[in-house]
Amino acid sequence: MDTTAAGERVSGLTVTDCGFRCFSAGRSACRGFVWRPIVDASFYDQYNGSRNGTSEDDSATTAYTPLVGSSGTGRCGLMKCVPPPSSLTQAPGAQIYLMTGTNAVAYGSIMVPPSYSMACTFAYRIYDKVQLNYTEAEMQCQRDRARLIAIKTSEQQRIMTGKTSRSEAYWIGLDDRDTEGEFVMSGGTKPTYLNWDSGQPNNYVKFEKDQDCVMLFQGTWNDNQCDQMLRFICEIPFLEF
Ligand SMILES: [Ca+2]
Ligand SMILES: [Ca+2]
Image (tube, rainbow, N blue to C red; front, side, top):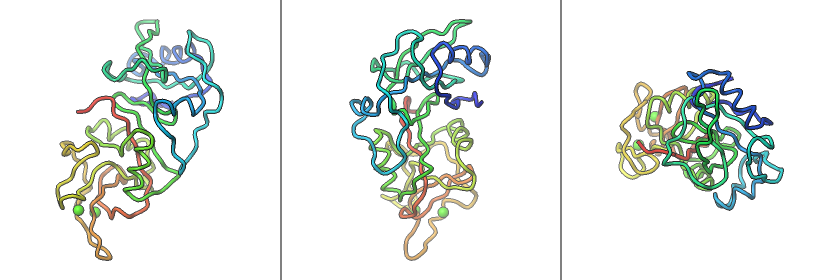
């Protein structure tokens, strides 16, 4: 089991069991955990707008049951750190607990689609069963109330490198479509953390099209033609750097 910032999710656990997993993992591996009841997808529609119609469906099928104590089972993810308090909402959704000594203390809740995994400062979804061009990928993320991932730290890059396939390429939220050579991240900021592959970006011209959209491939970045059909990664940021 991965107990780094964004642990693998395990389904079918109660809050108590999830807390026990966290406690057993030890404080260095688990500072807190996120637990989500299995909910009807329509429940999330109230908060997240209409869901996508182009990609994998979520497995959430049973009715939503409000979280009270340890009743019911859900998905459990251990976290090495937890989202900042400013990102928490009162909306019922993913429940976050802090481990304090031998106790799990309710910390808050956060509303992200059930298909998204939680990290410390963001939630993400790796779309690896559908391939879209850059604009379509952007739109798919927007339907999740998310954006193509803006990788702003080496920690965020490390997580994504670990979660993606080395044999595949994924669109990330970085492009120079407006002005050649001036890359802008999803959210409109200029990148300060950079992770280009050697020799990139090269704006390579093929069939009279240059390269204005950035993909993650084997752990580093490369600009590519925006009409290429690639996998992609969406992100819901909890904290902007
Ligand atoms: Ca370019
Ligand atoms: Ca390139």
